[in-house]
Length: 614
Image (cartoon, rainbow, N blue to C red; front, side):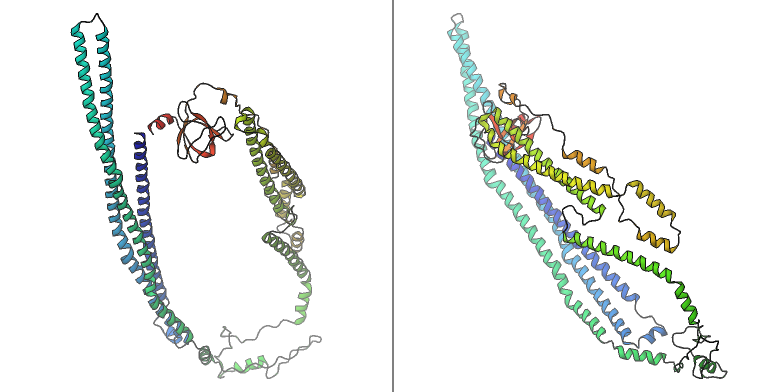
């Protein structure tokens, strides 16, 4: 009976797993449909934006645009816009085909898939409910037969007692005999009913497990394979939709390329020359001006002033003409000339400023070289063990991180040492579980590792203390910041000097992290050592605190252990207390220890009842 219940539970679990998987498959189809829909919307919106862009830059119906159309690059741009408009049309085709060939098809198929899935699982639930009801009916017949047998035995014992008693009348004895015969007859009838229904149940159970359920599972498998195949077809269509428009897209791109190749730079430049040719004669040479003597500037007939006077004569033909690139229509290109001696004096007066700028540029260059060196070292991962190649703040962070990592390694070694010490204690108190001396080499190795790691921590803490001593304190940082604020409005030379004396970097982290790290290097020893005397000396039966399932087979040769098979269900009567063993019970007489890693433990309040049910 228990085996039948277990199979029913496993079958129910399989139905639950299939139901979750098929629902996940439906969710995947819906997700893929949503993906294709969003892709279609993107293509449609993209085509709309491309069309608007092409329309926005189309030439307007005015004289300026018509004049620009004579240039080859303008005509090429117009051809590109037209091809781009056709290119947008192909993206509209992609969006429409995705909607009609994939989204509509998947939406219809989803409804069919949900209906088919619901039908299959309803059939499975009905078959499962039928076999469960038959099982309950069989239990009723069984209990009735058991009850009638007990009543018959009780009546028989009563008759034998009455028959042996000499003080009982013959009528009472006869009445007891008839009662015993009646009970025996009722027990025989119950036995016949139970036997007949048991045969019927076995037939139904055989049909359930070998015909009904396999057919339902096959239908679900066919449905799932059909869904996967449909997804594959849609993915192929997804690619074919793009592939079908590629030839037209290629023609559009070829048209753009052809338009670009039709551009003729020399022809366009000749158009510009012909359009903006001025006809002005170039100005004459500028004469030498001797500033050593007080002389007036003498202009030749070919100078710029003379040419200006000639052009400004009334009735001249060039009165309304302009010099190239001069926008002012009422002035000639003559500019005010400043004496060269004044410019030299200004240059000599500006020498201190140039010196200050050179110092600033040199300081910035040195800092850039240092920064590049640091970045190169960080990228290459090279550098000494104490990170002395880094700036102070970066070095402090690296050292702090190294100390934290070492402390974590120390903590791991200490945890492992404590676990081995507990195991050794168990072996000492129970030699049948193992040899205590076998743990000593590993404990010695762990102690050596801890000493090495603590030495490394001390070494890095020394470097960290050295860095923090050299770093400016927080008050110095605030004082320097205030000094910078008071000198904000000084002259350029003072700013340059301050730049040369600027600190290497800013330090934002507080220095109390060193104290915290040192506190974690040697944590306080734990005084709580579990006692194992009561674990092996208790003679009373311990209550169950949960259940467990064996993940691997365990032979259990040592005394105090128990052999288990893979998949076996057991009671848990004592948790793992850190020694790697869990105490379990198979029945009232068989209990012992199994490795904790060999079982999967389920702690619960009603574990015993659940195990009895299973």
